[in-house]
Image 1: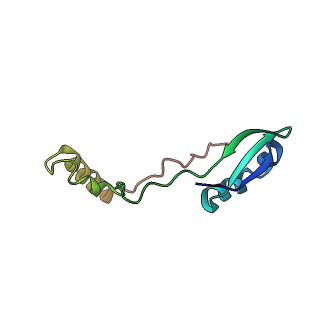
Image 2 (image 1 turned 90 degrees about the horizontal axis):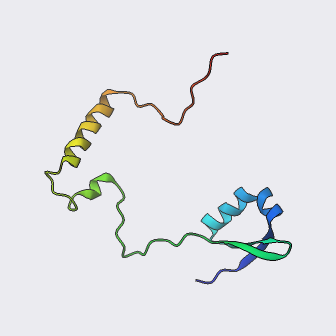
Length: 99
């Protein structure tokens, strides 16, 4: 795949990194990062999976890969039951420290 490369200094890259990553990931653009005019690195979008390649989209897609009697499915059902009965906590929230 051919990309039109935009050249950008390290300082410019540092200032606009979020914007650049968005252009790479969602716009398919490519960038060459330079230091004193010399190329140092290249930012390219990650290649997408081939359309014929099957990817697992959810846990239920494991059916067929494992026998139905596999303990994985029993544990999955147990986890579902527990999650219905309990309020789930976000593991990424921080606890407030008392002052």
